[in-house]
Image (cartoon, rainbow, N blue to C red; front, top):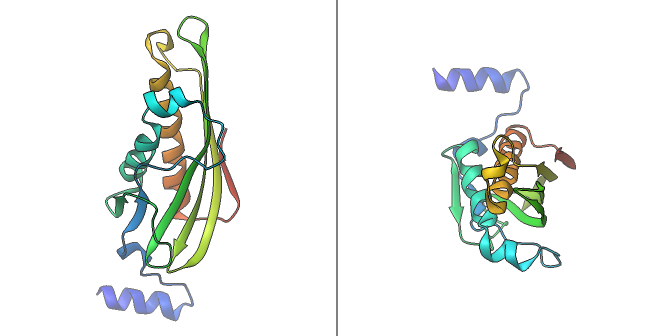
Length: 163
């Protein structure tokens, strides 16, 4: 039955990809861009680079495999990622003003499929006065991971996602 369905799709001239069967490799932790200006306290106190990878796996599904980087983009399906910027201004009393920026490229067997840039802002949401800075930054990478999971369903080169 499955073969007949695939044959019908191929006969109709539609693209049939086996990529969904291959795991998508994602680095964990996601590296920070080499030339970033992210403050050291964000890098040492917060875990946004681990959270981003974990949330991508949560939202993109079980076909995502987290691996320590750097990853070889010449074989298989690889999502190359880096955190470009993260800013933590304000606090629980003055109001949170946080954002994270990420860029990524999807590779399949050494060929670039598509790339994106994403940015999400957060002021902490409900009960922000009870949240710490790392918690609010975690909200930004959670939203970015949702954006990436949606983008992975139909990758478009040059996509700009988020706020």
